[in-house]
Image (cartoon, rainbow, N blue to C red; front, side, top):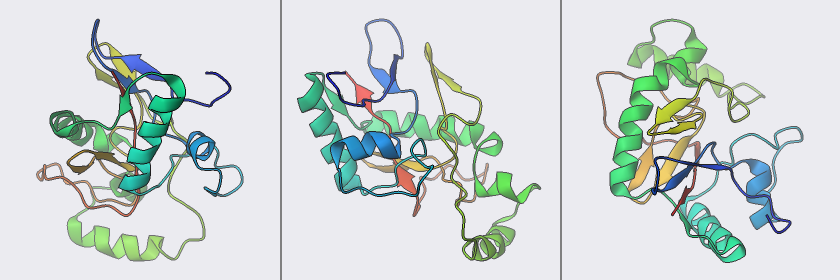
Amino acid sequence: MNGILIPETVLVKKDSISIGRFEITNMQFRAYKESFSFLTGQDNYPAVVSKKDAESYTKWLTQKTGQNYRLPNIEEGKKLHKLAQKVAIKENTLNKWAGYDLTRNDASILLKKVETLKSTLLKKVGKYNPTKIGDALIYDLGGNVAEYYNGGIYGYSAYDFYDNSDDSMVESKFVGFRVIKE
């Protein structure tokens, strides 16, 4: 739009908000912050950024497009987390990488081994099946990077252990974001 690489959003329901179909990618974020660097070939991987940078990006995007963009609010973030928990087992989480029914103890051992890898567990956005939210289909809600909302972080990253009996919000080192457009 107007020469700017902007995120694709999809309408949740008629006369409603739109939500980013994918997390903000490295290339989309670089359009905002030219000094943002990432590895060659990872243009369409999710951008791992600070919450401050995520909020600044939404303000910049609003200014550049004339449309109102923001992070999910607290209520939306909690709902998104519940949906993320439902689909996390099938998406890019540490559990998926293990290839078996991972326990919390196993997860900490596996994570130590993963930290020695020279490559990333993150994948291009849109790698897994979409999740339906109202009329919208969105990707990577249950895994790849955890995501910011106004109240904190929801969902899971590829480095996070998913426990279907624990619905608490996560602490994650790999956090990106998706936008809401009003």
